[in-house]
Image 1 (cartoon, rainbow, N blue to C red):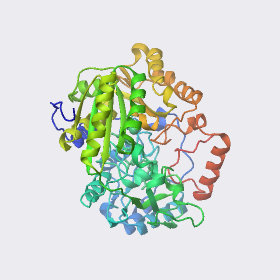
Image 2 (image 1 turned 90 degrees about the horizontal axis):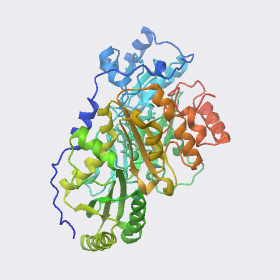
Image 3 (image 1 turned 30 degrees about the horizontal axis):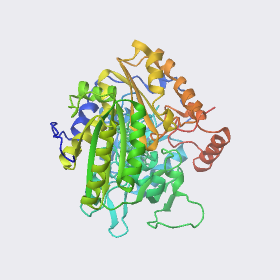
Length: 505
Ligand code: FAD
Ligand code: 2HG
Ligand code: ZN
């Protein structure tokens, strides 16, 4: 049964589609401060003397003040948020970052740390005139212990470059996401990014061995250990993992890279209803066991958005749901037998109605590309409201039909897809252009529904600029209070990524 279906789809490179989406709209988004009615906090205003000072720390070409050069740093990937920064700084070392932050802290100048700017909650771009601190030039690999798998690198390394580097040494990065060609490891750590391999390798609180970070006052915190076990006091690295640049900036990362699997296969299946998606997941877990490395699903509208908007071919016919199952193991024959038994069983049972399975790298890439492109395909419809939630699996898909019914013809498409294995669904609602009325129909309604299901209003993308005022739907008031105390302790002047993560009221 294995490899018996032919893939008729071309091997489109992921980055090509990614750039196609990035250039989808030339229209400037409205300023975030106006769109979301935000008042500027009492920070200092940047003076010519400040710019001159930064030019003494960095070379002149790493201090951007030209409006056109700065524009891309002010706009987020989904073109929802637009800041008004007048200054971008591109440090090349931790020492430079430390000098910059010490100065900013003294002058009360607000700072927005930025990695690859692929974040989906508006955390990576300024709201007003925060100085953008870009890590794009801090991209050196420092060391790799091939035996333990400990990789140490600067925070501006692009995830895909790291993966290519370690793969040459028979290792892989423990995370993978559609934005890999642009996102930085520092951005991944700062958002505690999940992605497509979390089911197998866990989240970054487990894989990150250590970090070097700089506090708002310029103090360098060295927690850059490469040890697997280190219970010496508080586990401070965790403060920087997932805090989205509000408690400190990450300058170096030590991360554990697992062994590169010797045998990888990927299946793409048509499934007739959501109940069967869950039954297939249960079966995949028990039949495939330790070789199951991804279990993703996409509903029909998710796939049709990529087919219609990005002209990506669907390798199988039209089905209500699609499931993507990846296996990664160390023994080709053993893994193939397991997968084959699983396929025979579930085709026989009818859980899999149709599908394609491949172990050829180019074809696997093509299938992954179809899945990874869903995130951007909706942008072609005009504007996308994105909700990244986790809910108990029994209710995983329940919000999608609810929203479809609520919005009716106001939406172009409402679709759900995501990481079933992690209980994390991405609900995308597309409209021809940003519409406040639709926004009010969606928010806080969707967060209320998630709270009723005991879910999380942000499963993997973070809180950023878009969700601080909704955080109480998922976090207890005592926990929010502790967050505020930590923020006060680490960044008393509030210069690091203001208007993000920590709610005001
Ligand atoms: P940015 O977008 O630049 O920044 C994100 C946040 O981190 C901001 O708050 C920023 O201030 C902060 N930050 C960045 N660098 C640093 C630093 N060095 N120190 C301190 N703070 C910093 N996310 C997932 O979790 N799973 C997915 O599967 C996934 N798929 C995606 C697919 C696509 C096509 C796109 C566009 C995005 C996807 N994302 C996903 C969201 C995004 O890619 C991740 O959040 C990613 O980790 C962000 O990395 P970045 O370098 O682009 O960070
Ligand atoms: C994915 O899993 C990403 O593709 C993006 O997390 C989700 O854009 C989204 O809604
Ligand atoms: Zn995701």
